[in-house]
Every structure is written in C-alpha cells, then in structure tokens.
Image 1: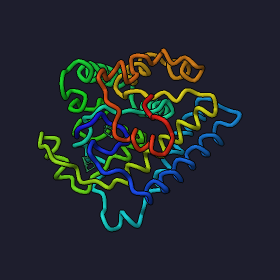
Image 2: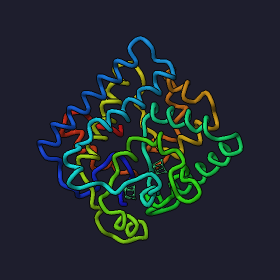
Image 3: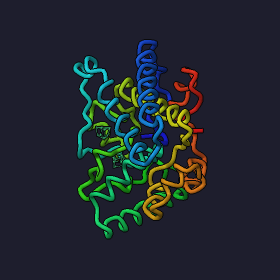
Length: 267
Ligand code: SF4
Ligand code: SF4
C-alpha cells in the first residue's frame, strides 16, 4: 500500500466514472441528511456516536450489490495485510471506537493499547521514508486481526481488494497494484464527506485526525472528546495530519471531492 490512508483511490488510479460519481453524490447526500437529523437539537456524546453508527449502516446499504456479485471482494474479519497504514478518521468515529474499547477492554489492556498507539505514532511520525505506511495499526490484536472490527473507521471499511494473495505480497514489499473495486472506496468517500458536512451544519468541528495519535490523546484524557465537542480542537493538535504525518500529501480522494465541488476532506 502506498499512500497515507484515506477512503482513497491509490495514486495513479483512474478518475471515477460519471455513473460512480452520481452514486457517490447520493451517498454523500444521505450521510449529510442523516447526520443533520441525528444532531438536530441534541449534540450530546451519544448522538455523536450515533452519527458514526449511522454512517456505517449507510455504507452497507449503499454498496453496489450487483457489481459485487461479479467481482466479490476478498476482505473479511481477521484479514489484516493492509493494516499498517496511517488511518484518518473523524471525531464521531473516534468516539464510537473509544466507547467500544472502554466497554471491551480492562484498564491494563487500555494502558497497553495506549502504549502501542504511542509507539506507532512516534514511528509513523519520525521513522523516515515509508514509516507512515509500514507501521502496524495499534488496534491489531495478537494473531494479527483487528481488535475492534465492528467499530473500525470508514476508511478501513472502504479499503478493499479482490485478491488477498496480492495484498500479502504488497505487505511483504512487492510493488504491484492492489486489485480493488473503486466504487466501494468511493462510497466511503461519500459517507465521510457527508458526515463532515453534517457536522459543520450542526456547528460541530469536522476535524480529521490520525488514528494512533488520536488514541493516545483520547485514552489518556477521558474529557478529550467532550472538549472537541465543546469547540476545543486544540486538544487533538498532536493528532492533526500536519503534526502526526509531517509531509503528508493529500490522497487522490481529495481530487474526487474537489471534482464534486465539496472542497477538501483533509483541510
Ligand atoms: S484489502 Fe486485502 S488485506 Fe485488507 S482486508 Fe481486504 S483482502 Fe485483506
Ligand atoms: S482499525 Fe482495525 S481494520 Fe483499521 S487498520 Fe486498524 S486493525 Fe486494521
């Protein structure tokens, strides 16, 4: 894998077709309307978490079943060859993830996770060329599976392949393209964009953060997400893209967002 990780078309991939763009615009609109409706008059933490849950449900609803019947994706729970990239996510997604982790892990496990996240964040930031995309996700559980699969971010849901053997070869250093289904990633781009627009409309910050750095902050300070909700984005300063991934290049997904007139997802 070769780009800092977003719901993303890899560099050099073909631009989305007109048909796909129309579908993604519908997805984006659905996520925007759902986010607005959930937050209307109540922007409490449970509502913020509900925004992420709803986006995940919309993802399943808007996946192109007909297309997937002809080219089934190989992704499945437990498959993790792609889990070494920098993961970007919104604050509702982080809130959903932290809630799940606090429910499922004990204090000792949360401390160990925070230490892994801290080590990952440091390596990703200072490990030199390639470190951003070759550092294992701190949520990888022993045996190399996602330790929080049901609450994984949008970007992880959209990233896909039709051939796990190729994913393994890429993970081991082979420089070859990942065979994937673009519309699946594009659906998740639309969801992320609609969610961000809905947050802004509700007066909340559409901040995008880097997962491992954000875990360090949110697991170390139980009030961090509440402070973001109250308008304090500085609490996540160290997890912002420019701090956590210096030299980061906006992924190709930004070109598609711009094409749709939606601005940038990673501003
Ligand atoms: S993209 Fe590849 S490595 Fe990642 S879950 Fe899908 S098949 Fe597995
Ligand atoms: S959150 Fe889970 S699915 Fe996403 S990169 Fe980390 S381990 Fe993989």
